[in-house]
Image (cartoon, rainbow, N blue to C red; front, side, top):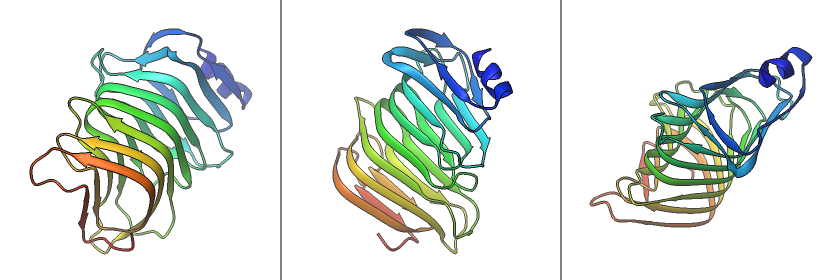
Length: 217
Protein backbone atom coordinates (compact mmCIF):
# COMPACT_ATOMS: atom_id res chain seq x y z
CA UNK A 1 0.00 0.00 0.00
CA UNK A 2 2.87 2.38 0.81
CA UNK A 3 4.46 1.73 -2.58
CA UNK A 4 1.15 2.43 -4.38
CA UNK A 5 0.72 5.64 -2.38
CA UNK A 6 4.22 6.82 -3.36
CA UNK A 7 3.53 5.99 -7.00
CA UNK A 8 0.30 7.97 -6.84
CA UNK A 9 2.14 11.02 -5.47
CA UNK A 10 4.93 10.71 -8.04
CA UNK A 11 7.87 10.61 -5.60
CA UNK A 12 8.90 9.73 -2.08
CA UNK A 13 10.67 7.19 0.11
CA UNK A 14 9.07 3.91 1.16
CA UNK A 15 10.67 2.82 4.43
CA UNK A 16 10.59 -0.82 5.49
CA UNK A 17 11.03 -1.11 9.28
CA UNK A 18 12.64 -4.20 10.85
CA UNK A 19 10.64 -7.35 10.26
CA UNK A 20 9.96 -10.06 7.68
CA UNK A 21 7.94 -9.15 4.58
CA UNK A 22 6.55 -12.11 2.64
CA UNK A 23 5.48 -10.74 -0.73
CA UNK A 24 6.38 -10.48 -4.41
CA UNK A 25 7.12 -6.75 -4.53
CA UNK A 26 6.98 -4.82 -7.82
CA UNK A 27 8.38 -1.28 -8.22
CA UNK A 28 7.50 0.51 -11.46
CA UNK A 29 7.88 4.23 -10.66
CA UNK A 30 11.04 6.31 -10.88
CA UNK A 31 11.90 8.90 -8.22
CA UNK A 32 10.80 6.53 -5.44
CA UNK A 33 13.33 5.09 -2.99
CA UNK A 34 12.73 1.72 -1.31
CA UNK A 35 14.82 1.58 1.87
CA UNK A 36 15.03 -0.93 4.73
CA UNK A 37 16.79 -1.12 8.10
CA UNK A 38 19.73 -3.32 7.14
CA UNK A 39 19.71 -7.03 7.92
CA UNK A 40 16.80 -6.54 10.30
CA UNK A 41 14.52 -5.97 7.29
CA UNK A 42 14.00 -9.29 5.50
CA UNK A 43 12.21 -9.63 2.16
CA UNK A 44 11.13 -13.10 1.11
CA UNK A 45 8.48 -14.82 -1.00
CA UNK A 46 6.90 -18.23 -1.34
CA UNK A 47 7.73 -18.48 -5.07
CA UNK A 48 9.18 -16.59 -8.04
CA UNK A 49 10.95 -13.26 -7.62
CA UNK A 50 11.15 -11.41 -4.32
CA UNK A 51 11.59 -7.91 -5.80
CA UNK A 52 10.97 -6.80 -9.40
CA UNK A 53 12.04 -3.37 -10.67
CA UNK A 54 10.77 -2.58 -14.16
CA UNK A 55 9.75 0.11 -16.63
CA UNK A 56 11.87 2.79 -14.90
CA UNK A 57 13.47 4.61 -17.81
CA UNK A 58 13.41 8.34 -17.01
CA UNK A 59 16.72 8.08 -15.13
CA UNK A 60 15.96 10.19 -12.06
CA UNK A 61 18.19 8.06 -9.86
CA UNK A 62 16.00 6.01 -7.56
CA UNK A 63 17.68 4.12 -4.71
CA UNK A 64 16.70 0.64 -3.57
CA UNK A 65 18.35 -1.30 -0.77
CA UNK A 66 19.53 -1.58 2.81
CA UNK A 67 17.70 -4.84 3.48
CA UNK A 68 18.12 -8.60 3.37
CA UNK A 69 16.64 -10.88 0.70
CA UNK A 70 16.13 -14.53 1.60
CA UNK A 71 15.11 -17.46 -0.55
CA UNK A 72 14.37 -19.78 2.36
CA UNK A 73 10.63 -19.25 1.82
CA UNK A 74 10.75 -20.72 -1.70
CA UNK A 75 11.62 -17.83 -4.02
CA UNK A 76 14.04 -18.57 -6.88
CA UNK A 77 15.38 -15.07 -7.67
CA UNK A 78 16.09 -12.15 -5.37
CA UNK A 79 16.02 -8.95 -7.44
CA UNK A 80 14.85 -8.92 -11.07
CA UNK A 81 15.58 -5.69 -12.96
CA UNK A 82 13.65 -5.10 -16.18
CA UNK A 83 14.27 -1.38 -16.58
CA UNK A 84 16.09 0.71 -13.96
CA UNK A 85 18.00 3.43 -15.81
CA UNK A 86 20.48 5.37 -13.67
CA UNK A 87 19.19 3.57 -10.61
CA UNK A 88 21.18 2.53 -7.53
CA UNK A 89 20.92 -0.87 -5.87
CA UNK A 90 22.86 -0.77 -2.59
CA UNK A 91 23.49 -2.52 0.71
CA UNK A 92 21.82 -5.83 -0.09
CA UNK A 93 22.35 -9.10 1.77
CA UNK A 94 21.10 -11.95 -0.43
CA UNK A 95 21.10 -15.53 0.80
CA UNK A 96 19.84 -19.06 0.16
CA UNK A 97 18.43 -18.43 -3.33
CA UNK A 98 19.03 -19.48 -6.94
CA UNK A 99 19.90 -16.12 -8.55
CA UNK A 100 20.75 -13.10 -6.45
CA UNK A 101 20.27 -10.32 -9.03
CA UNK A 102 19.02 -10.73 -12.61
CA UNK A 103 19.39 -7.73 -14.95
CA UNK A 104 17.82 -7.27 -18.39
CA UNK A 105 20.59 -5.21 -19.92
CA UNK A 106 18.52 -4.19 -22.94
CA UNK A 107 16.23 -2.14 -20.69
CA UNK A 108 18.60 -0.84 -18.04
CA UNK A 109 21.28 1.78 -18.74
CA UNK A 110 23.89 3.18 -16.38
CA UNK A 111 22.81 1.02 -13.47
CA UNK A 112 24.93 1.05 -10.30
CA UNK A 113 25.30 -1.70 -7.70
CA UNK A 114 27.06 -0.94 -4.42
CA UNK A 115 27.84 -3.19 -1.45
CA UNK A 116 26.14 -6.43 -2.53
CA UNK A 117 26.71 -9.56 -0.41
CA UNK A 118 25.63 -12.99 -1.69
CA UNK A 119 25.79 -16.09 0.50
CA UNK A 120 24.78 -19.59 -0.63
CA UNK A 121 23.46 -18.31 -3.96
CA UNK A 122 23.42 -21.52 -5.97
CA UNK A 123 23.16 -20.34 -9.61
CA UNK A 124 24.25 -16.72 -10.16
CA UNK A 125 25.27 -13.90 -7.89
CA UNK A 126 24.70 -11.31 -10.65
CA UNK A 127 23.32 -12.34 -14.03
CA UNK A 128 23.38 -9.63 -16.73
CA UNK A 129 21.69 -10.55 -20.02
CA UNK A 130 21.58 -8.75 -23.38
CA UNK A 131 19.87 -9.67 -26.65
CA UNK A 132 20.65 -6.67 -28.85
CA UNK A 133 23.80 -5.00 -30.17
CA UNK A 134 22.85 -1.44 -29.28
CA UNK A 135 25.88 0.58 -28.18
CA UNK A 136 24.30 1.75 -24.92
CA UNK A 137 23.98 0.54 -21.39
CA UNK A 138 26.51 -0.07 -18.73
CA UNK A 139 26.60 -1.56 -15.27
CA UNK A 140 28.81 -0.31 -12.45
CA UNK A 141 29.58 -2.63 -9.53
CA UNK A 142 31.48 -1.55 -6.43
CA UNK A 143 31.99 -3.88 -3.44
CA UNK A 144 30.57 -7.30 -4.31
CA UNK A 145 30.97 -10.47 -2.21
CA UNK A 146 29.97 -13.95 -3.36
CA UNK A 147 30.64 -16.86 -1.06
CA UNK A 148 29.08 -19.80 0.78
CA UNK A 149 29.01 -23.57 0.89
CA UNK A 150 27.03 -23.98 -2.35
CA UNK A 151 27.77 -21.20 -4.80
CA UNK A 152 27.54 -21.09 -8.58
CA UNK A 153 28.69 -18.37 -11.00
CA UNK A 154 29.68 -15.13 -9.30
CA UNK A 155 29.02 -12.76 -12.22
CA UNK A 156 27.68 -13.56 -15.68
CA UNK A 157 27.60 -11.13 -18.61
CA UNK A 158 25.94 -12.80 -21.56
CA UNK A 159 24.51 -11.76 -24.92
CA UNK A 160 22.61 -13.82 -27.46
CA UNK A 161 24.03 -11.59 -30.24
CA UNK A 162 27.09 -13.37 -31.65
CA UNK A 163 28.33 -10.06 -33.12
CA UNK A 164 29.10 -9.01 -29.54
CA UNK A 165 27.12 -6.64 -27.37
CA UNK A 166 28.89 -3.75 -25.69
CA UNK A 167 28.09 -4.61 -22.10
CA UNK A 168 30.20 -1.90 -20.47
CA UNK A 169 30.72 -3.61 -17.13
CA UNK A 170 32.91 -1.82 -14.61
CA UNK A 171 33.73 -3.83 -11.47
CA UNK A 172 35.68 -2.52 -8.50
CA UNK A 173 36.37 -4.31 -5.20
CA UNK A 174 34.99 -7.83 -5.62
CA UNK A 175 35.56 -11.03 -3.65
CA UNK A 176 34.26 -14.13 -5.43
CA UNK A 177 34.57 -17.63 -4.02
CA UNK A 178 32.89 -19.95 -6.52
CA UNK A 179 32.38 -23.59 -5.58
CA UNK A 180 30.28 -24.87 -8.49
CA UNK A 181 30.87 -22.59 -11.48
CA UNK A 182 32.92 -19.76 -12.93
CA UNK A 183 33.87 -16.70 -10.93
CA UNK A 184 33.21 -14.44 -13.94
CA UNK A 185 31.59 -15.70 -17.15
CA UNK A 186 31.55 -13.41 -20.22
CA UNK A 187 29.97 -14.40 -23.55
CA UNK A 188 29.44 -12.46 -26.82
CA UNK A 189 30.32 -9.19 -25.10
CA UNK A 190 32.97 -6.46 -25.12
CA UNK A 191 34.32 -3.67 -22.91
CA UNK A 192 34.98 -4.80 -19.34
CA UNK A 193 37.03 -3.31 -16.55
CA UNK A 194 37.98 -5.12 -13.33
CA UNK A 195 39.94 -3.59 -10.46
CA UNK A 196 40.93 -4.95 -7.04
CA UNK A 197 39.20 -8.30 -7.44
CA UNK A 198 40.06 -11.45 -5.50
CA UNK A 199 38.78 -14.75 -6.87
CA UNK A 200 39.13 -18.41 -6.05
CA UNK A 201 37.30 -21.61 -6.90
CA UNK A 202 37.16 -25.33 -6.38
CA UNK A 203 35.03 -26.48 -9.33
CA UNK A 204 36.95 -28.83 -11.68
CA UNK A 205 37.72 -27.40 -15.16
CA UNK A 206 36.08 -24.04 -14.36
CA UNK A 207 38.11 -20.89 -14.87
CA UNK A 208 38.12 -17.79 -12.72
CA UNK A 209 37.65 -15.63 -15.82
CA UNK A 210 35.91 -17.44 -18.66
CA UNK A 211 35.55 -15.71 -22.03
CA UNK A 212 33.64 -16.84 -25.11
CA UNK A 213 33.68 -14.61 -28.20
CA UNK A 214 34.51 -11.63 -26.01
CA UNK A 215 37.22 -8.98 -25.95
CA UNK A 216 38.49 -5.75 -24.40
CA UNK A 217 38.86 -6.65 -20.75
